[in-house]
Image (cartoon, rainbow, N blue to C red):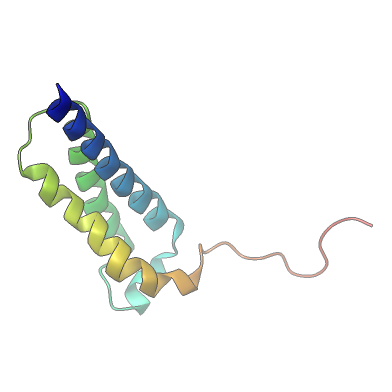
Length: 103
């Protein structure tokens, strides 16, 4: 019972890392990826989406063996290599120009 619970918790943590990486990649502007010499945003979203789907299957209890370990690799690469390089580009939202707020 305990090893099953531990695997569930580990799978949940892995899926959370994958999901947050995917959401972060969605928020970043596409030109940030290509400007920094990384794969395009769409390719990263595809890679992280597939990894997240595999992570979700592991959380749901589908026996995957080492596939779940391989599925966390793209998220870790994104966090360690890609995100620090594209983070200065912000989220692509423009800041309001001129005065903000009321009286």
